[in-house]
Length: 184
Length: 281
Image (cartoon, rainbow over all chains, first blue to last red; front, side):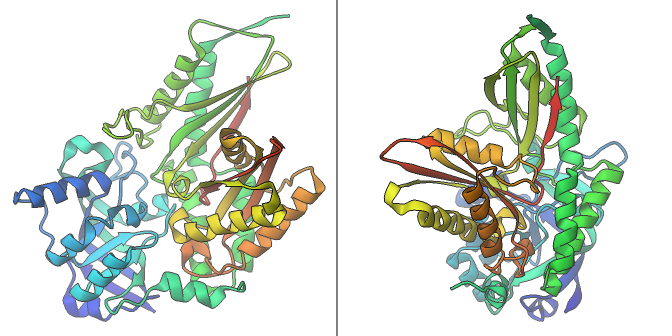
């Protein structure tokens, strides 16, 4: 089913999403990938404040290519989510509601998604040029020294994603693959 | 006759090839995506393949990289033995081409100087350069930017000779199934069989640069390529790993003689953005 949601997310909209839904997201989201996650985690450990509020927000696992003159951003597709697994349950416990990436998640992350009523979305890996068209504004808000890995605040309009793991723990990577598998 | 080539010519070509490879996909890859779109059975899979086709058009028309991971630059240099390079060191010239290409082409700088300390070099150097000497007085250059979503899912298996052809097929299938959605399917699978530990990995990498409509010239290897293509497309992984009948666009296998005690197999997985640019200087 095609659905439209806003970000930051509203809990009732999020809980209504089901594994396999095509979702178009409009609003404000944040980017963070490997190095930013590591820094956030280290800051939390030292009880320092972190540069973004996690509550009801969505993180996009993205390190864009540089913007050409007059453009908002360069190519902007998802990176592999499993590298963030180590840091994710803690962020979900702190109120993060959604993640956009690609690829499998660990059991710990899936359990935490269910426990906290969150959703894991996949954007289409390798469609960075197409996805960049949905990004209307991009501002580096922290860790500028990390270059492409800095934290950016993005204004997005109808960013197309698919619900892979919903708040009940249904996992499209398992169900859909099973549906088309013709091997033993 | 010795032919002198100024290394600045290599720099200029590498720079242009880095930019070209990251913005325009070769016609065999585009054709394969078109065919996949026509045959894909999953409605969601079809939707995704359509997004990928659209993505290639946008990249081409608006000069935006096809994928934000513009890769680590892998360069194959086949150098005619009658060539004499002048004007500097050939390795430096290649890296200068990468530096210029990634900076002037607005490509992402994804290389860290030390694998554990991890500071970004900010110009995407150094490249990984593979040199080979051949007859003649020309230089054959291949630039293959390699993204790491799929690189991370690649594997080397040191099989036993007794594992035979079934063992090789099983290894390839295992690598692809483990990769699943992480490697941005539909994938291209490059395989090296034989040689030594490092030789098979290098063959697998180079197999990815083969035109995907071309098969191995060895009849039984060609058969294996076709069989695996069919089998992997029955795994159900599908476009984006979200289920479907298009999981791989090609399986390219290269072979080399090996030791009486061994059967090395390397599986280098590439996403659907299988980029490479080739030139002869």
